[in-house]
Image 1 (cartoon, rainbow, N blue to C red):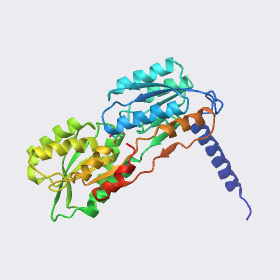
Image 2 (image 1 turned 90 degrees about the vertical axis):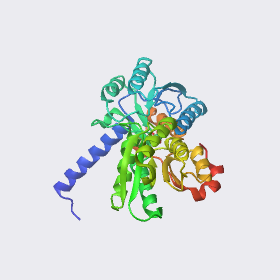
Image 3 (image 1 turned 180 degrees about the vertical axis):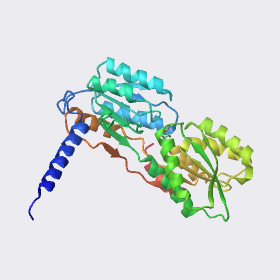
Length: 328
Ligand code: AHR
């Protein structure tokens, strides 16, 4: 078939966009390193709020060691200003690459522009950012949080046995964080397809056990036996809430169906004890992939702009069989 002038023009535009995309993803223009050269990474961690986060920090530290990477690691104690300070200090120290898991989604443009001006590539891990400028980071490695919320919602619709209205209470993650925003969105997208399912209370438990327990106590005080389901944005808050439910004289996993996210060992133990109904997996073991990706970026190799972690879902019926395979 003959090629028209329009076809040729379209192809030129596509070639230009593809090249621009690769340049953007590799961070080309910044100093390219040899693939096998030792490098220094500054990592700004969210905090130590959950079992998941502990496993994530451990994965990053051990992968750095195994790959001969000099790691500068900081803990922001769930505060954005601490993460910004840490990133600025990594820029001042002229590290080769900066990686971080943003506490919240917005408010990163200024500090990331500073990293860009210093020609230091930035890799996002675990959580994404809300920015109009995709050139501020090279790639984002982590889970699809919206899909995790959908998985939780689908499990509920397919497995809930009770009749009539289903009253749900929701323990949200840290306000403004990507997992809290996206998991809520994915879960609501699914449950709104059946008008029986209603979220009657929703509040943040900041991803911690202590706050999960405290907020669940308040939910129980306000709603009592009306509560049929708890959707917790992470396992730690679900574990805290289980304690509150037991202290209120109810049976977690039976009187109240409990759904959470992460798949940490503590959640498997709760499932084996019949107190948690299901956990949606969110893998914290991102260290090896982060080191490999950083090396590729520094060598000027093209990397995808988004690397999504593969994950499953574990209901209580399979917990005992799966437990020995769990790595976090
Ligand atoms: O960003 C991942 C979330 O952060 C995990 O689900 C939660 O446990 C953690 O604190």
